[in-house]
Structures are given as structure tokens and as C-alpha cells.
Length: 212
Image 1: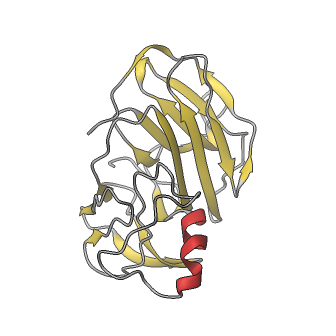
Image 2 (image 1 turned 30 degrees about the vertical axis):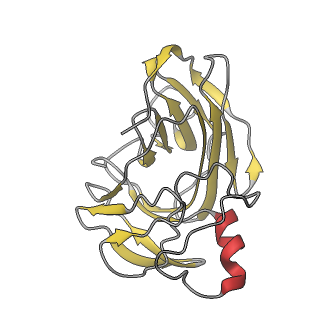
């Protein structure tokens, strides 16, 4: 979205590992076995193996293609092809259902700071998964951190430790969250390891429906 830093993103590590034995791009129309332990409840999976074109094929059973907006460009990162965003307006648009229980995972790489202190990884109606890149704000948790927000009357905000996501290094990042109560806290992960997840703003009120 507008105000994002320049980033590169990839699909989830667990599902990349599941497809590793294929040693090929899945055939068009092929999607994951949702009965597999890694894929139960899987709503979206875009492996980004296309390497060209202007849409992302969805490999979960929801079949919700990701649509390019303002020309993200193809790049390479670690496991293969990836998408590079300009830090201004380029993004991928998709439709998502209501999700009271959620896990988000991606491989991300921030090359340089853009014009936003809080660049998004995933921005949905009910949740925001993003970076903290502000070194000037007095609030703890905004300097090279991983952040998550539950959108409510007063949005709940949580973050990883200061300095845990510096520029110039690829990271596997993930978050899990249950929005059924304001007392529930998410768990943030970096490179597969759960990290200390501190609350920055206490959530208040009803959740915003994530469908959209």
C-alpha cells in the first residue's frame, strides 16, 4: 500500500517444504491436499513460483488469485522467484473471508527504508501484519520490529523486541492470533522461533470483520 517500504515477499516456508519433493512448479489447477496436517484450515497460499505475469495463482482450495496493483516486479529471493514492491503504491490485492483465528506467514526482505514508519506485509480489514521502522517515536517497539494489529474500536498493537528485523536480511516471519477476546495476545515468530511479543496498545471493543 501507499507508504510501504521497499520489500520483497515470498510464500510460506512450511508449504514450500511440502512441495519441495515435486521439484517443479505445480500444474495449473493443482492445489494442496487440505487434509494434510500442514494445510488444515489453509485459506490462502501463493507460492510465487510464476516468475512472470501480473497475477498469482492460488494453490489453496479457495482459489483466490492475487492481483497486481501498480506493477510489483518479479525478483529472486532464497528459494526462487519473489515479488519486489516499490515502497510507494505497488501491492497485491486479494479477497479474504472472516477469520477469527488466523496465522500469517511469509518470507520478507526489506532492502531500504521507504516513506512509511509502519510498512505493511499483509493489510486486511481486520488485521495488519507489518514492520516498525521508526527510530524517532518515543513508543517502544517501533525500531526494526515485527508488529501485529487487531482492528477494533481501539486497535490492539503488539511487537517483537527492538532491532529484531534489521534491513538487508531475509526473514521468515509469522503470527498466530485468536480474536475471540481482548485478553488474547498474538504470538510472533521470526525464522521459525517464537519471540517475545509485547503489547503496545491494549485492544478495546468489538473486532472489525475481516471479510473483504
